[in-house]
Length: 163
Image (tube, rainbow, N blue to C red; front, side, top):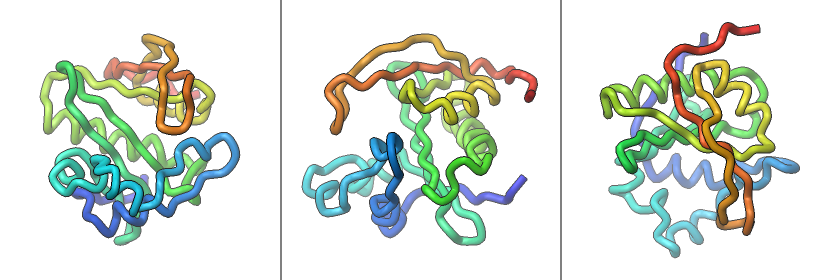
């Protein structure tokens, strides 16, 4: 297991993740440029919201991923973004486990859930292997797609055996 540091995301790190570009079907995860995010006052650009919800994951002082932890409707919702060059290398499991632990520290005994695009088989497999189960499938509008399909997954705290 690699050593990761989890910290509150600063503005410089927020700007950096806006430059990350994913290829092919994963391009739906590309963020808008920083100026657009600021202009629209999206939570990443609002200091108080960013500091409350966004976490930087660093390794040797280099940003390798970020996490989002929000509390809505009595449930902790997690989000994760890996630096594109780090995708597909097995880092997701360790980083998600860090986010789960942080969620438990911030919101003890609250259910933990996430949503993931249904095409993202790599992420779904990672989430299932650490203890998430698919509970619902639905479509909703996103900033870039009118009818994007998602799975809603809940953390069951007893992961499947790794195969």
